[in-house]
Amino acid sequence: MLAALAAATPAAAQYVPAAAPVAATAELSAAAARLSMARAELAASASRLSAPVAAFAPAMAAARLAEPAFDDVIRDAPPAASLQGDPGDSLYRLARASLNRGRYRDAGNQFRELRRRYPKSGYAANSMYWEAFALYREGGNERLRRAAAVLDEQREKYPDATTAGDASTLAVRIRGELARMGDNEAAAAIAEDANDAATPAPPSPETPRTPRPSRAPRAMSARERDCGDESDMKIAALNALLQMDADRAVPILKQVLARRDSGSVCLRRKAIFLVSQKQTDATEDILLDAARSDPDPEVKQQAVFWLSQVGTEKAVMALDSILSRSSDPSLQEKAIFALSQHSGGRAAAALRAYVERKDAPEEMREKAVFWLGQSNDPENPAFLRQVYARTGSQALKQKILFALSQSRGAENQRFLLDVARNKDEEIEVRKQALFWAGQSGSVSTADLASLYTTMPDRQMREQIIFVLSQKNNDAAAMDKLIEIARRDPDPELRKRALFWVGQSKDPRATQLLQDILTDK
Image 1: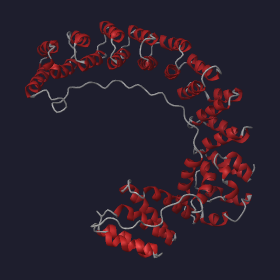
Image 2 (image 1 turned 120 degrees about the vertical axis):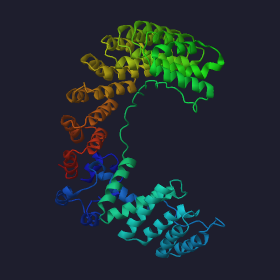
Image 3 (image 1 turned 30 degrees about the vertical axis):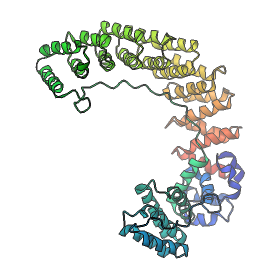
């Protein structure tokens, strides 16, 4: 039975020969270290197991790891008093002496009294660790619980205490002791810690960073951009006039934005925002002029952004021109976003043309790919598949795979799976294709199960296991993971599948581990 558990549970194999199972009840925990795991005992206790199923075997090892025999060394002697003039100095010396003489109850009380009387003492932070240590050495269920609570409080109040590292190790020891005394919560915490430390989860594919729309520019306050009292008063007056009578205010704003002197920069930055807030016959021309010719980069960027709200062919042509000719990455990014907000075919064509430009910055081409994936234009998916075949950039390929997963559709599904199967592709690209195929929801569990059967590459099989694990509340996906955990001839793949089964709340996960433990 132990051999079966070692073969099926990721981290347990190195510990099982020396460890005994930690049950989540007092009666089993007392007997576990001395008795073999008989089938009748396991069947009787299975319903009372409280630790997560996948973490059960790591928890057994962790309980042993909590013992001082391992290399989890902690500080067990307080340093000499060193804060001359500190109000808590004498009480610290007294508590330190008590601890060094083995008078743990006195030491714990004295460290606690130090904080009560002198909460601002330089010794206060570390006194919590030494109080917990004294309680731990004194022993007993109640004192161990108090010690754990003190360490939790120290972590909250004094995260930078010099004893913080020792405190974390001591907390593990304390939970181990409590678990062996039948504390279910401590056993679950030990199981979780062990699962994290001893059984690393299969790495998730790196999710392509989603480009975010540029932040909407806004009128800057005087505090943010000191334009001077006079300019601020002018802007306030223009804003008030705009709300009352846009026909009168817009021509004045146009005159402000026509200025090119350095002294009007701050005024123009605020004026461009006001122009964008009122759609009039003149709004588009004012924004276009500012985007093309204003000498201030920020005014240009704001004008380009607000052109995304102007849904005319004239605006699209201007944005296309800016994107093609500008060498300013910030301006290019805003032009890409602005074009993505236009629903006409001309805007999508402009973005597609930009993606094809090999002289354009790759980062900007990737952003254009992203927005094409968000569009409903039926030409975009076919275009992206063609670009994928022509590009040698792995980063651009991964962005295209993500974009295609957003477009859905049977052709995109087949394309993603074909990339995953293609041995000529880089392994990371293949894994990303598989991941996004699973995330898109257009690839069925049956397709993934079939792919697992025909895929000879272990890394890709591991990725399929991971993708199946992400299909929450999918009974067929859980069935396939359980099948792999039970029957796959590769023990490493069985371990991977078992790990992910254990992360679910499906009752079949509990049954699977029981069956493994009882050699069923």
